[in-house]
Length: 260
Image (cartoon, rainbow, N blue to C red; front, side, top):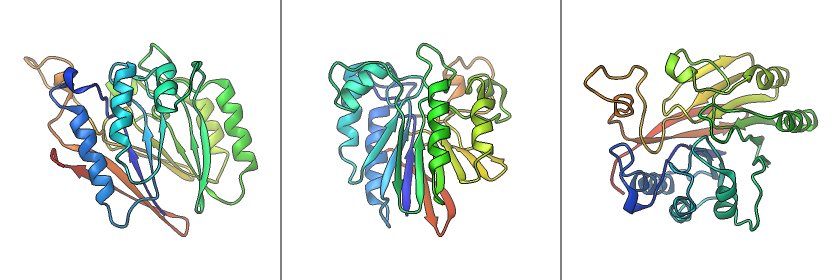
């Protein structure tokens, strides 16, 4: 089995581009084309949040149009730059939608995938509410021998970069206690930090992924560079490829040039 993690495209329509020096819609278009060219082809894509940069319905419509070019299914969850109501209305096609959390679980091959919603509307930091924690425990307790992959936007672990660690999942110990107690959990995939980190915990690894939009620096550039550009690099868009064979997970980062 092969699947792809895309994250943090931060799209707005073309007339409102660029975002922090880069045309994020064009970068997502190129990333989609790169995913479609992979051989072997992935079975599906998971998009781990921050689909838009402004929470507007027009931006979600643009994201949906771009993702429609994927030749495989795409599962989407929100990040802190998203808003659940327009997310649900546009991305999920719901009418009269309510801002309820977006969770999903599905089985593919030898793995169970669990998608969590860490959006805390109006905040940069994230939360997993008590309802989700109870739902997660129920799913894990009823899981068979399948390996579990958890996908979410905000990382639940300290990365060792202060300005990023200040923006993480709040009360993360509640989630980690559940994950630590379930040996079926093998991998946690996160976005949010626009950088590739890997943190080992007991029986699983927590990975963060470079962004489709722009990549972050661990240390801001000194003056005269101004925030937020002092936090950005000129590195290309990127995504993570995960290959699963007989319970073993192999991941690689795939960089995407700024052309189709």
